[in-house]
Image (cartoon, rainbow, N blue to C red):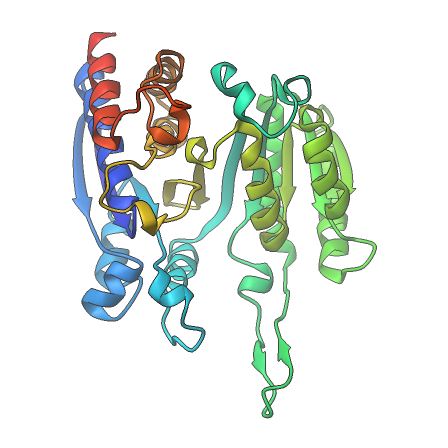
Length: 356
């Protein structure tokens, strides 16, 4: 198969971890007989420094022309520490999601047998956890208008808006995911308080009879926040709005023991983007110490979700598990034992795939 993949390394450790993902993708292509063409483009703080725009038109054109997008990370301290900055790297991320129509963020949470002890939660609570969040990505309070402050600057306001269409397309994806898994779907909302949440619940209730095999559960977001740490194995597929999903998926990410291990996908009508869930971690940038496994597992998701190549996806997840078992990991996971550089982990993973 011929594949055109856009590379958006971004900021901080993004370029380093994406470089390792590329090594692994190339190894998979060689082993399975695929031809892959990569095209790199700028985004985030790097793009602001270069052209004054965190998501320039040239980058958008590269993404639109690709079969899939591999994305690193966005963010830089010089913008975080300047509340008056008119252009921020994160604006590029929102613009990219909007322009590419990336309406669903797919965030799996699962455990690694060799790392159960690194989780802040007890082993018996998390062992066997395998859930996935579908977070609506282009609506809600992050995009709603009006927003701003009053003339005196003493009050600020944001607006949360959702349409039936936005909710239905994500909900249908959730039902379809559930049909392929344990047939359990949880709709996360705050319908006792918010009008938008009531529309979410009404829409899911209307669709549910079309999927009679799926058990649908409705839970308030605060209850889910609590139960995620009490008994995460109770969940399978969860769907929710943008803000709730942003918070809950970060909470869920610590179940595995490290945010550096969790991949994600952002799915649109035509474009699919894959990225690690961790941030740009600027303190580690350029030091060759960042954990690349989430970026590598994002490449595994790419083969599965963008190209429907399950064997290729499994080959990557298998070598990642092997690296954890054998201790071929960066310093964040080494626990005082020998640690490997970011680039060394990437080389080892690619080499193992070629030996399979």
